[in-house]
Length: 118
Image (tube, one colour):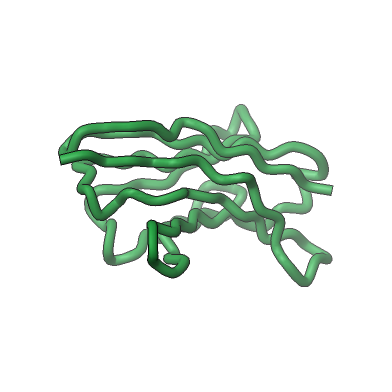
């Protein structure tokens, strides 16, 4: 019903920036919101940011607040996670998931690897 595809990950030096994309397809009108979640090596899953599908309301976790921003291009079915001042501890697989009307669970993308080197 809803498909998500993350992109934009890669290798970056500490202090650098990356912009991740979460492209949604399928029944995108049923999407209520998009969440960004990450899981680093040997770590549990950590919530990063969230945005309503309208793009009006956003929330960023305290751990990345001031460095990361989440937004949506209203001309595209794409949500972005702009990551600045990256730290090695930000290294993780970043995934987006969609909260969809009528679905108990969430739809997940495949994830994109972000590696921050010193």
